[in-house]
Amino acid sequence: MNKIKAIVASVAVSAMLTAVLPTPALAAVVSTEQMMSQGASTQDRAAVDTFLARADVRDQLQAWGVAPSVVEQRVASLSDQELQELSLKIQEQPAGGDVIAVIGIVFLVLLILELVGVTNVFTSI
Amino acid sequence: MALALLAGCAAGPETLRLRQETVSVELSNTPFFAQERYQCGPAALATVLVSSGVSVTPEALVSEVYIPEREGSLQSEMIAAARRHGRVPFRLDGHVESVLAELYAGRPVLVFQNLGLNRLPVWHYAVTVGHDADRGEFVMRSGTEPRHIESDKDWLARWDRAGRWTVVVVRPDELPVSASAESWLAAVAPFESLGQLDIARTAYDTASQRWPGNALVWAALGNVHYALGEQSEAAKAYARSIDIDPSASLVRNNYAQTLAELGCTERAQQELATAAVGANPSQLTLLHSTRADIAALSTSARCPFRP
Image 1 (cartoon, chains in turn red, orange):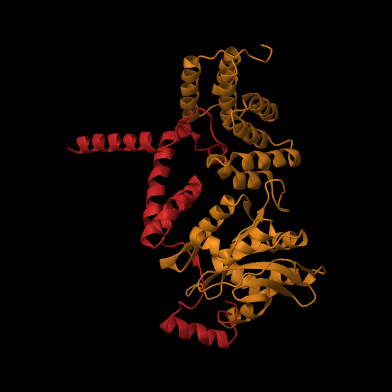
Image 2: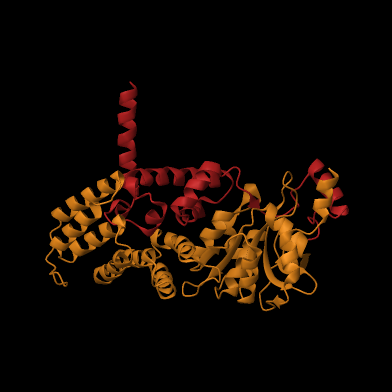
C-alpha cells in the first residue's frame, strides 16, 4: 500500500514539475546560486523543494490577507534560499510594523520601561 | 545582579569606538515618507529606493511587502521588492563601521530595529541617514518623524536586538563600500536565477572589474552570458575562471556544455574528463548527465576556437 502511495506521489510530483517548472531549472549548466550553495549535486531535488516551499509560502501569505492578485508575483521574486527559509519558519519571522497593535499587559510593561528610559517605543514610531 | 546592572549602564566597546569618530555626516537630501499605520516597511523601503534613483511611492509598495494579518513586512519580502525595482539589496555585515562607511559614501541605510525587548519585541524598519560624531547621535527617517534622533547607545541596542539586519540598495553598476566578491555575488545571484538577466550581467561585470582575480566572479559572468544565449562570451568568461581556479568541476561542466553548443564537441569532452578528476560523487552524476546531453546534441555550429 505504502509503495503504491509512494508511486502515486512521485507521479504527481513529476506531473507538477513538468507542468510548472521552467525547463532551464534542470539544464546542464549550473547557476551561480547553486554554485555558491554547492547544491548542484541534487538539482532535481532542489527543484522539488523550491516548488513545495513556494506553495507553502504562497498559501501562508494568502491566509494572512495578501490579495490573490499579487501573491503570485510576490512569491515569484523570492530566491530559492529565501523560499526555503520562509517555508521552514514563516510563523516566527518578525514583521516590522509599528506599535499601535501592542495591547494589554504588553502595553503596560513597555510603557513603564519607556518612562524609565529603557525603551523608545512611543516616541519613534 | 549588581554587576549586570552596572554593565547595562556602561558604554559597550562599540559605543566607545563610535565616540572616537570625528567625522559627522547627514544625508539631508534623503526623502521622507511619513508612514501610515503599521506600514513602516513600505515607507522605509521607498526612502532608500527613491534615494537610489527609483521612482516609487510607499503606497505602491504596500501591495508588494505589506501583510495585513501580520500588520507588518517580512525582511525577505523587503529584499525581494528591492530586486523587483532593479536595485541590488545588499546586507551589511554586523559592524557599525560598515554602516558609517555607507553613510560617508552617501548611501542611506535601511535598518531593522527592535524598539521593545527581546521578550516583548516591537519590530520596526527605519532609515539611518546620518551620524553626529560630536553629539554621539544617529539621525533617522523613522515612522512619522522626518528627523528622528537616537543616541549611539540606543541605536546600537535596538539594532542589536533585531539581529543587526541592515541593508543598502545599490544600482547594479556600483558597489557597497564593504562588499567582498563573495557577498556581492550572493546578493546578485538571485537576479540570475529569477531571470532578471540584464541586471545580473551588469552587476557581475562590475564585480569583474573590481575583483578580476576571482574565479567565481568570472564563472558567474559566464553563467549570465550563457543564460542570455551569448555562448561565445560565456566561453571566454568560463575559460578565464578556469585559468584562475583549475579545480572547479562545476565551472568546467558549464564550460563543456557551452563549448558543445558552439560546435567544439571534442574540447567539450576533454573538459568533462578533466572535471571528473577530483569531482565528488554528486558532481560526477552531473558530469555524466552533461556528457549524455552533449552526445545527443546536434549542432551545425563550427567551433570558433582552435583545437
